[in-house]
Image 1: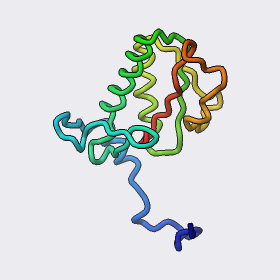
Image 2: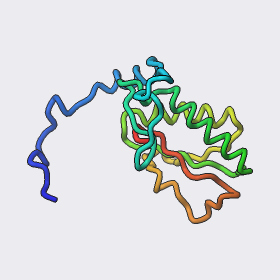
Image 3: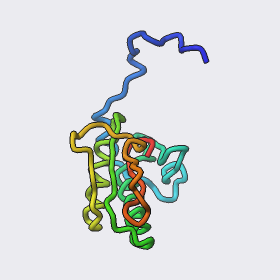
Length: 143
């Protein structure tokens, strides 16, 4: 695959996003559960969407995290859950939402002790047996 012709050049204004606008939309816009375009949609590595189109918002993250809590309880998982974050603009707000739900459901949560970026594969450890911990979670716009 040939590199993009713009590789190594400065970003254009059309390449940038208004992060404050994305974060505000994450918290303020409420998805319509009857609108298929605003429902939780999973891609190859997780939930896909944008806060601006009301397809990746706090309500989505709270609901999917609650589903993780319910699944862990049903399966008898009582070990810690590893949570990461990455460089996507909505990763930190989504992580905060997920942490609130996890703690409210008495899930022990482990985070990177350096508060660094920790994409999901980095959270995996050979000792994460199903009876001890669930799969890691990395809240991001592709979560």
